[in-house]
Image (tube, rainbow, N blue to C red; front, side, top):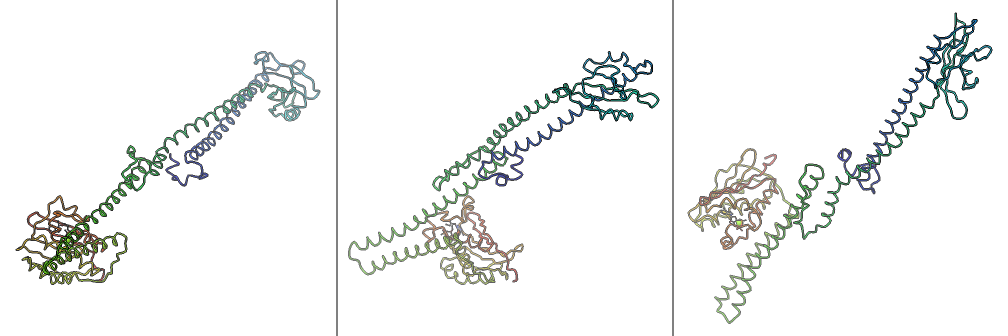
Length: 475
Ligand SMILES: Nc1ncnc2c1ncn2[C@@H]1O[C@H](COP(=O)(O)OP(=O)(O)O)[C@@H](O)[C@H]1O
Ligand SMILES: [Mg+2]
């Protein structure tokens, strides 16, 4: 798993057509094989060297014992009885180098095999040689001079068969030969099993993701939550499905709401026409019918234009034309235009706290926003109430606030106010000619300007809608 998190799935080296679990296992086994081979070679080499050193040291000790035990008969060196104390597999030969006569012991190897060592011994040096006797038997032989007063009297050869050492080494080799492949096989099996287990949730994710269409976005992977890579992948995936599901549901509801909203005025128009055409009518009655038809047509025109605005905003086609704008001028403009409507409703409409704040904004859109907010305030404020518009600077931001002393909004509705088609009181809103899209459009306008909109309200006392916008760079 370390390799996985280090390199990431896609960058794990190896042929991409191989499944990751195989690549992972191959890497793992190759790595382990390298380590095991290096370790075995080291083990074999140091073991064989140790054995050899031990064997040579044994020969040296034996040679020293024999040297100390050499007898002289008429000046001729002879092997002493220390020979009988040596281990039986050790062979000893005492030679006279000048006349090449065996002075004692037995010899299992040829003279030519030890010739080089002899010439060294003639110079008083000790030498080790490994010699072959017959076809298969090898001997390790120590050749050492027997000297008296600096004169070489004889050469002592002492040898031990290599068989034991070689048997030990081949035993070790056999062990390594069995243990290494067995370990690798076990590691490969275990590695494959682990990789399979670790990656099987990914197969599950792949299969589920493949089976999810636009129609069943409610499906989830529903895997046990874990904090590892796969667990995070699964929960990220589920989170994405959740958002997609919500977006699709919103879209469907929007379409259904829009159709429903259009159906009512259409039904009114067609029944009005049917009823009117039932029999001949007076011109006053016709005028009345046309007025109804006209007002429903106006409602539909308004609705369709709002839908169009939102649809274009969603697809990013609705671009802002930004220019430096004074919010205080916008506010007075709106107060001027909506003054007559306020008067007609018996509501006072006035400016409150206005200072010169400049934003880089789209005049049409910001006017639309103020119209919507002020229109709502007038709609939901009974006669005798007061609606005020403020344009000021607060904590480095431009603020537009529309406050009323109207019916207010219950806290439970506040979080939904800016959703499309959301209305607190459907009947009342409809009677006032609204479809519940006004605040959704305001929200979009505020966000498109890099700002946001908030609503606060005390039921029965009034509401305040506050729009925060970034100040223009160079006012
Ligand atoms: N100033 C306000 N006072 C009380 N309720 C309000 C106010 N502004 C908006 N609302 C509530 O929020 C809802 C959504 O407003 P909006 O999106 O403008 O839709 P509409 O005006 O078409 O009804 C309204 O139906 C109304 O219930
Ligand atoms: Mg409205």
